[in-house]
Image (cartoon, rainbow, N blue to C red; front, side):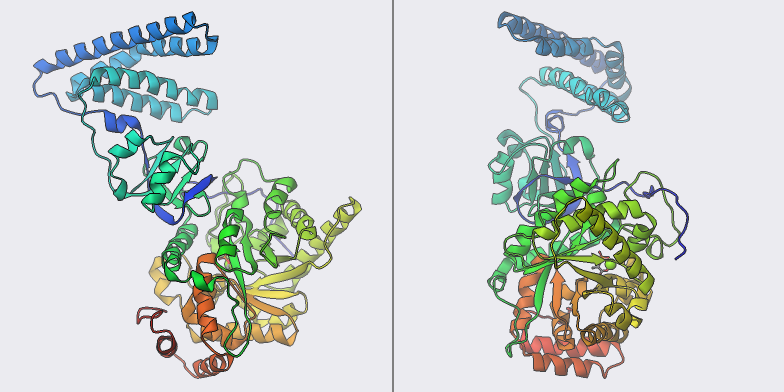
Length: 602
Ligand code: PEP
Ligand code: MG
């Protein structure tokens, strides 16, 4: 097959880069909002305008006496440390702070701020520090960049001396996600806690003050993130998944959308449905549907099991590539996949090879612009072009096969050539591992995602190549109805109830079953209870979804018979309009589950 040339890979520079940070989730739930870099100075720096020019000199004098006081404190501290026989390191730091207090530029800038802006000395020094922070942030050298903390500490000392005991804290904005090193009880006492959407801290543990406060206020929180305060700026968009312990900074549109949806699910699921989590998805007349969980981070596995996943139906591996200078090596991949396969409580695990491109992240810093990224160098196309990168991932996935039941899944297959080539590469890697003496499991299943209309049309042929299909409705709908899945302008056309979509899905199920293979669905349609009965009626074998959606889908399946689902589906096939189908299905669902469906669903 002809593929484009051999340029290197590719990150888009038209949006701030996505960053994923992992810490310890200490208060569950998902929140999406703007970061607010909490800095004690914000609360402790009073601001006022000097009422008359005559006060300017007074303010400058205050500043100089605070400088002097600060220097005296530091010299006293140094003397104490010398007397107590401490090592040299703290003494150096004190010397550095003294030098900062004497820095002529810092002094001139602050005096200039007082004069020109007619503000109090505390605010003037704070503005000086902000200016320094801007300069230091741009430094390439990490060591130099970190030196801003010395300037901040010295500045804080001056402010403390200016403020004395008389300061009145200013207020923080509402509806923010607080980013801080850690919060003391004194800090939280000053925050309007009930107006905060989430917390992400450099430090802390399950019992740290922030964690306890967050749990009691039911605010999602992740702690022990290391250096989030250095990596995140005020106003960065940020997602906190307090259940998985993950923080995503500047998410791309697709991730933001998915988390918006997860958030809604979380809020619904936590209420009353957990009773269904531990039950099998069996209809009243004993037709069984397997239920998988979709995950993007290994940290989500406990939640998948807790909410009733029998296996992992989709592990999106793309996040392993996010925010890296260097591509992950085989061992790093393995370290991730090892925690997915053979986990107690999961009967199988489906690892999807990476689906980078389109709107998902690129692994390198170089820019690769595409006019139509959704139709571009994405997923399997990208892997078949960058074979070495692909092989590293495949070897790591294969090595997990000794731990448990492994399914490997290739995304975005559009024709037989691609799956053959992917399988050949996989076989090659198997051989090389075996030659290296690596032990592999002997019932690895190979499957493909069906998410391009061409794959639906030749599903009978593709079914002979693989052990299972998994229908990716997010993309299948995008490509069959020609709707960019993240473009809000056309989202009204994004219709799982479109008769074409329903027929496409049914023909995949039939093609798979005729060839004797299993057909799963892992697109978001699988997670929406309004579609569950149709999908069961079509004969789908497995539904895989975000863990939080599982209990509700199980509830639906347990509340119907296969026979009635089949006849509902037959009836749906007679309609031509989206609205007819939606109206009919919704009415049927409302009849059976009045407490679960309203006229706004679907
Ligand atoms: C899909 O397209 O339905 C799917 C599950 O894959 P993704 O959302 O990762 O593209
Ligand atoms: Mg897809």
